[in-house]
Image (cartoon, rainbow, N blue to C red; front, side):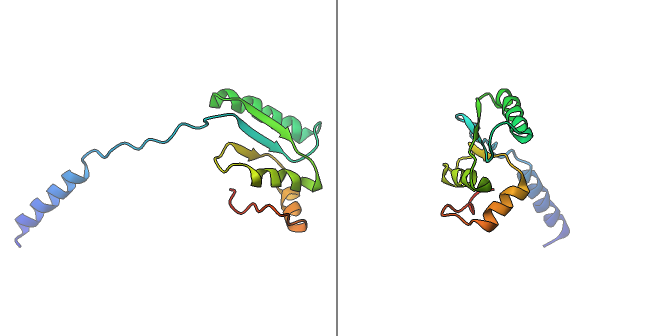
Length: 117
C-alpha cells in the first residue's frame, strides 16, 4: 500500500473511534433503606460517630440510614449479620479494624465474609 492510502485508513479509523458510544447508565443506588451494622454495644464514642455518619449519609443518599448495634463475641456477631445480609450493598459495617480482624482470626464462625468488601 502507498503511504497516502495508509493515512486515509488511519483517519477513517480515528473518526470512527471518536463517534459517540452509547452512554453508560448505572442503576439508582440506594433503592431502599441502608443498614449500618455497628458490632458493639451502644453508648460509646464509636457508636456516636456511627450514628452521626448515618444521620449525615441519609440526606445525601435520599434514603434513611438505620444504625443497628449488634454486639457479642468481640464483634463477630455483627460480622455474621453482614455475611447473612443480601449482597446488594445496602448493608455495611462500621467498626474498628483491629477488633474486627481479631474477631475473624480468633473465632472463625459459620458465616463466611469472603464475598464482602
